[in-house]
Image (tube, rainbow, N blue to C red; front, side, top):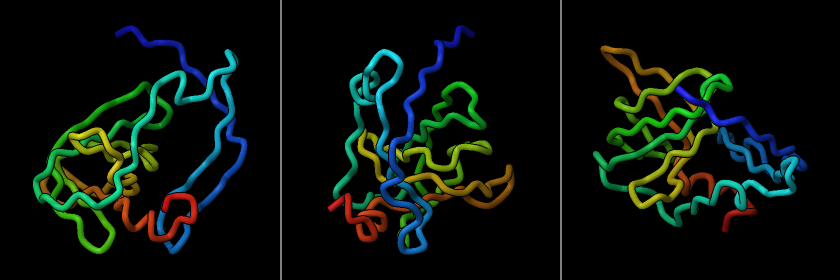
Length: 140
């Protein structure tokens, strides 16, 4: 497997962090060594303006577990209740917290926060976008 060289973008400011007892952060990033901002280098995702409501909706998590190369997993949502999205068919690994949970339309619908799914039981879960929007002053 060929791995593209990594790029670094410095964190200039931690804008918001764990507001309302929710596990999320908003950071402002600076340019990489070539002078490009992350959106110019890789494109942008849109943050959804409403929670995903369709149980069994397909979700995707783009993760860099423990700093390893990018890994993409997809599978159905189990539920979205009380600001928490749960899923048991999306495999995640340690170090993947903070990864976006993306819908089939390409919108960020949540942030992955916890593993807990085994081969036989349990769920992985994350914070739903409307819970984040409700706590954030930077995402109206």
